[in-house]
Image 1 (cartoon, rainbow, N blue to C red):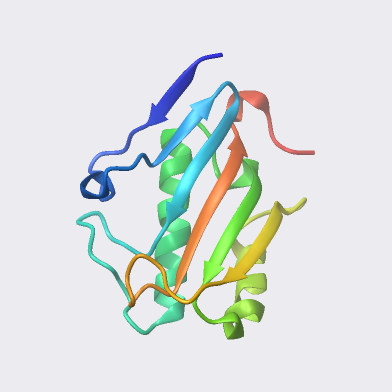
Image 2: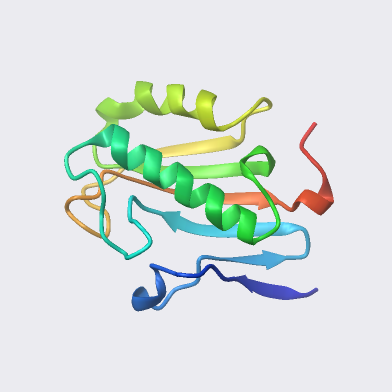
Length: 134
């Protein structure tokens, strides 16, 4: 089975020595997407809404680079530094994903890669070539 690294340009993760994700057959495994801009700077310090927006935009960008989209996400793990945002995450899932919604794990963590980061999302998706979920 062919394994391909998903590459974006510019890649704000390059300094961290990790891949944005990998395509393995018709599956994509996407690294945790944080609230960083294309220059690698965190956005929305102290603003959960701004960070969540950036995280979902980053996730969509990497999925496109891998030949997929948010509609083909089958599993996400969402890391929050404060579980008080749980209800907000449920609303955001309704805005960014479509039924049938992906399998999901939501975890509260003490910290992410930066103390200023409030949310990170990793995902597994199928490629567009594999078709949409039914």
